[in-house]
Image 1 (cartoon, helix red, strand yellow):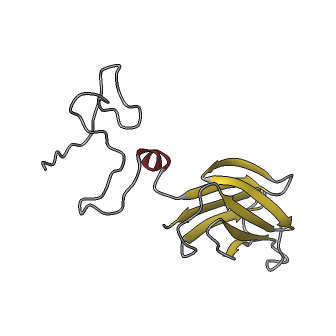
Image 2 (cartoon, one colour):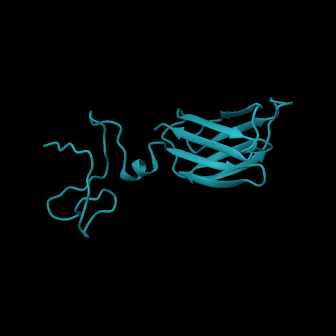
Image 3 (cartoon, rainbow, N blue to C red):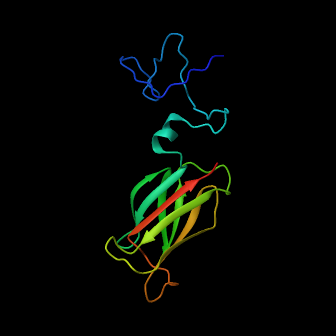
Length: 153
């Protein structure tokens, strides 16, 4: 098999596969997954389009539980003050994934403690706790800015 290395592919026809921009007929093989230089770490065109994260979400829990934007997140459940569950659309392969995130009371508040904690990792969801108070930093609080990103299998 031969390998073609390019910086970018640009199509100019009308009979094209929208996932990769290559001709979908004739002797051209359609790429359903892209791997790194060692043939590992497979990514589909859709995953690359959204970024390599397996899931991410930006939600507001202060006014009402509302998902502002997301990828591979079916919903966010409001469990209690400062407590939420991020539910994945497509389950993770195992519960050993990595979660990172941030939380903030408002866009204009600064100079106080805002913290986010993750626990109860399952293949279908992760629990999130948000804190944010200058006078009671260990008290759970509904914040308006909550961002969670998930990496893993």
